[in-house]
Image 1 (cartoon, rainbow, N blue to C red):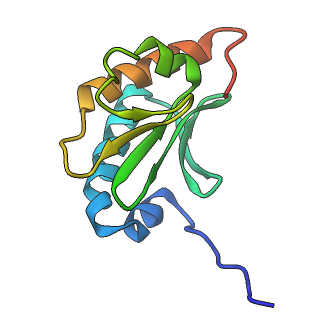
Image 2 (cartoon, rainbow, N blue to C red):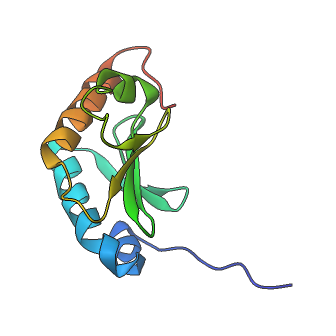
Length: 125
């Protein structure tokens, strides 16, 4: 039996282990999200970076040709018009590595999610 590979031990090690082309975008996204959610706890959830208060606010991850932000479906619906040029699903936004990261839009989505998390019935996914 092959031993199970261990994942990264921290968010910085996750970023350092990500594909070279994605590392800059991950650092930009991390800085943006930390600024939009002051006081949030940074950790790894399911092997990817996450920010949380009492519950998870969002996670983000690197892939070969894009970085993804995973807010809630409500956040994606709220910004559907602004996200029209990006590939999305009910809970994922993909930002291609060959285009600038839309930091202003990410900040707005993150602030929406922070506000959403403060509401009584707001849940993660």
